[in-house]
Image 1 (cartoon, helix red, strand yellow):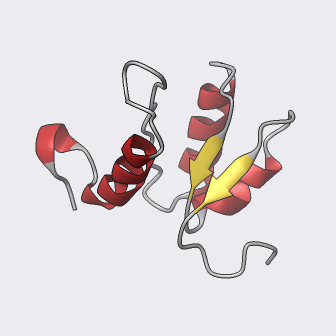
Image 2 (cartoon, one colour):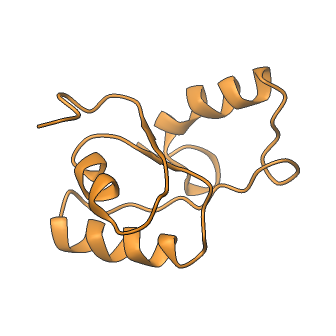
Amino acid sequence: MLGKAGRATGLDPFLQGMTALGYHEGKTFELDERWGANSPEILEREALAALALKPSVFVSQGPALHVARSVPGAVPVVFGASGDPLD
């Protein structure tokens, strides 16, 4: 579901939590939002493109979690709802 400016409404709790911790999008962190339509090929392509930006962390959920965990490099991955993260 999309909210303001085409952003997924599922990000609202994450962004509220970041604000509560003193982080402010566009000031203290940048969010590069990517979606893969649950397609492993699209998810992998987007993860590799994001990796080229040298992120500090990947935030992921659902099927994208497994792709984020498999990209080369030492980028930490945090996640919300994902089912079994080790499966």
